[in-house]
Image 1 (spheres, rainbow, N blue to C red):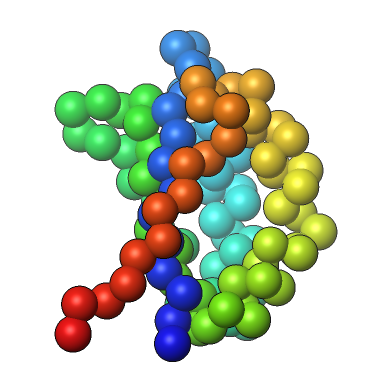
Image 2: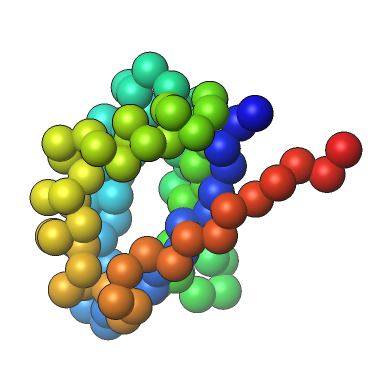
Amino acid sequence: MNKTLLAEFTAREGAEDEVSRLILEYAKKVREEEGNLAFDVYTKTAEPRAYWIFEVYRDEDAFQAHLKAPYGGPFNTALTPLIEEDASVLTFLDPLS
């Protein structure tokens, strides 16, 4: 079964350009992961500092491999001081069938 989630965070005032640069650079790497099926980055129309990242991985193993990727830690270290939350807020999703 696919592992699907929504990651959310809000860029601090004035950090929007740096956050956008970081997340788009990170997205390129994640999309190259063998088990990644989707990594779509959005901002809210009414609140452009709010980011939503829709992620889909082939399965739990692919998601765990994503978490262990060597570029994830440096990305999160760079992102954390630029966002309002302590870290990305993750919401795991299940398909309605």
